[in-house]
Picture (cartoon, rainbow, N blue to C red):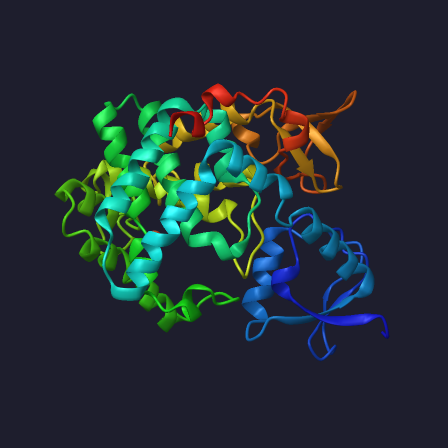
Length: 376
Ligand SMILES: [Fe+2]
């Protein structure tokens, strides 16, 4: 057992073919046998039965697999290029200023906020939805989570509003709601927000106060914005917070923000988790219909996102870059892809890890005319 190292259950991932046995922290118990394919259900089961610190012993070989995957999911250098090319970088800097002011003196800089919100509205007006999907799905650093989250939920809200055929005025309000919905989080202690582990019950109770804080910070904003932002953690079946609203009692803009919020939270890297692929997220969102999310919104989101993801380049779990050929409604997590002449039906063992954006290659084709920056 000399080649064994201490690791955590969180480092395991679904689809891993375990090269050598995995043991518990004192090596008294065999947890996973060599050659098994890990599923999410199995990992969840391990977490439930071996809680506490979730420590496990894995072989150097298993660690190598985990490191390879982490390497494929590290922040892509092309993310910066994409953000610079589209004007996202400037929007990010302004958003950081808003969040810093909230955590510093508990107040919102209304002019800066409206300026960012207008930039996002223009972006949603003039940027191809496909580019917005690239922006919100880019591999980024966990340190940037909160500012990216506010911007991305604003952008996704804008996309959904347009897909639903809402008026320009309503789309703009939705974008503002997305941008503001989590600003209350800037008042939550960072040691809780950035905890490199799942939260304790008490810590989660503190986090649950953030929709209320967001509402309080928005005194100067229209009622429709405050109500929607407050409702972004309500669930369609009534089991959410802070007010336990259900169905159409949840303001429509709150229901939309809940969809955008889940997409962005899952696609983002956090200190305790790797980003999920857009395909995995669509399958999760699809399953949440009529339980956490409004099924009618889920239908629109999943259909439109699938259309946008069609033809995109992706990184596979074996490191190859492939093109998405088709996404079937019942197989959202596992699209059919192509590498050179080879058609691959992705599956648990060989799946999509993330979108692939190659700034060098796309330079010639990039549509600067339609970038956000051209209109700022
Ligand atoms: Fe939230």
